[in-house]
Length: 441
Image 1 (cartoon, one colour):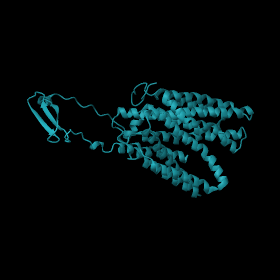
Image 2 (tube, rainbow, N blue to C red; image 1 turned 45 degrees about the horizontal axis):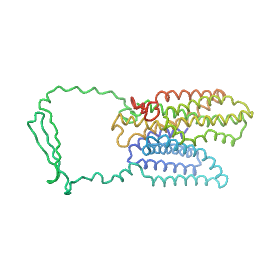
Image 3 (cartoon, one colour; image 1 turned 60 degrees about the horizontal axis):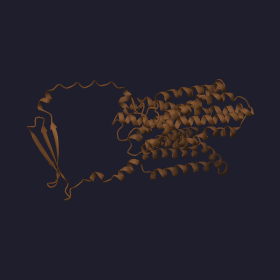
Image 4 (spheres, rainbow, N blue to C red; image 1 turned 90 degrees about the vertical axis):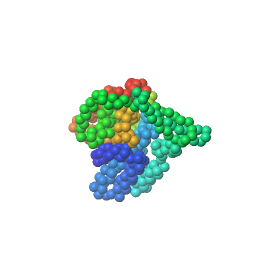
């Protein structure tokens, strides 16, 4: 709960800072610094309040790292490869979640308590060093085109050509000229027509009335514009649905296998491999999304995940067939969830891109990718709280069959805005409305 709350609250702040900062790398490094601090607090802390603070700092650092990292991906890669790279990044996140506890357990058993934190601190420090060496795309562009603005073509005598600007009235009675450049060289004549004096007496159209704006729109214009896109909202909600379903298993799956299948903690931990291992297909799934569009791929994911969740209800006894069916169905759930997440993360890129086209200059020099992906991170943070809390509540109040049925319905409902508003295959059509469709499937 502490981690999710800190991540949800910290994500918008991180997005604003990353878009306003001259360097996303600096924001990323700040997030890694907080992760280093949280790890030290975990290592040295003994009092409960210290551990709570450490968890909050860890959540805030995660919001910064995820937001700045995804924004860097959006800044750097080609629009035709956004899905592949988003899948690659999300696969790395899931892989860390998969192997982290496993390696920590081995290190703890062999080398002790402090060795675990020493390895974590080493990984963070190594990552920090890599970020210092990272060159952002806009920085590289400055180096590549440095001095280009100082270039001025000259004639064969080495003198810049002369430019003459001539202005005339519409009646042709008056004319004036201005000569720019050196005394020698060819002259370039540019004629600018001036309106007739009587044109100032023509009636002017009244300016359009100003639209009333809310306090939120005035204080946070960029975020307000982003939230006006139904396409972006649908992608964020789809990611929230996916993350909530995933997080709900953290609460319900260990209790179910312990109560029904009588597995110990090791068995309860290993069963999560069935859900997490399919995340390694993220890059492949992202590539499919780049080819066929986020709507199609993510809806296939919803179509696979929803019935698979419902089918978990047939596992209800401590029989061999139940022990076989459970991991098989969970693999299906894992594949479906990954078919949802990476394509929708990529579709957020297209939603922001069309908003930027329709509202030229509204996002400023820094753009709005970081603030858009802060919504993604806030959704993930909120899901880490809602998933376990909701799943655990229904499992305690009802039973396994009813709980997985409710989760299945929740997943199905999450597919509706995705079906209605997200984009299709890139290049099939132009965007419409407030960034709702960059492509039309």
